[in-house]
Length: 221
Image (tube, rainbow, N blue to C red; front, top):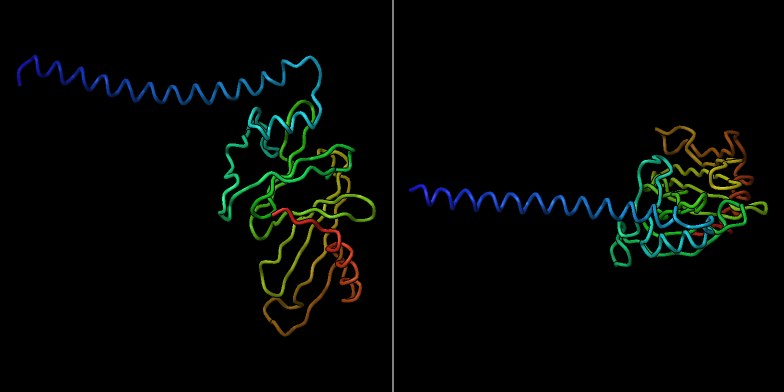
């Protein structure tokens, strides 16, 4: 191969690698720009935005939400599989005061109860999220206040429920748990025992309590 052909080949290879590198840079720039625009859109307001305004911005994809378990992590509405017929698709749900603070939270309906979003301090935060058959998310109305509920009924001979009451999404003020389980987990004929906040109760007491909880429960699948 003569020098001229070698030079042409090297130039072509250089152009290909440059194109790939530029493409990656472009993708990184787009992601960075989206995050910066999201932050600036809220920070540049003259006054604190209402929760409804912030939730609207998240729904239309203008701002990201913050992962409450990792404040350095964010997600966008475009990260969800929205509106398809698949089992893992999400849809925009209702707005309900889930944390008893007088302002509505946004429900994103989806698998295992979806995700609940709270808006405060000019940001949108993940408030609660379903996570598999052992942590199905819903909410219920009990004793005049709203409670978040997580359900686990995936195993035969066992069902467990955990409820949380908030006064503001960052202020957990009460918890309750109740369950029905085998007396002996290795023996299906051992009979059931019923617990409320760790204390054993009768079957009648358990069913009476459950009827109040489930009568007001709202599924958000």
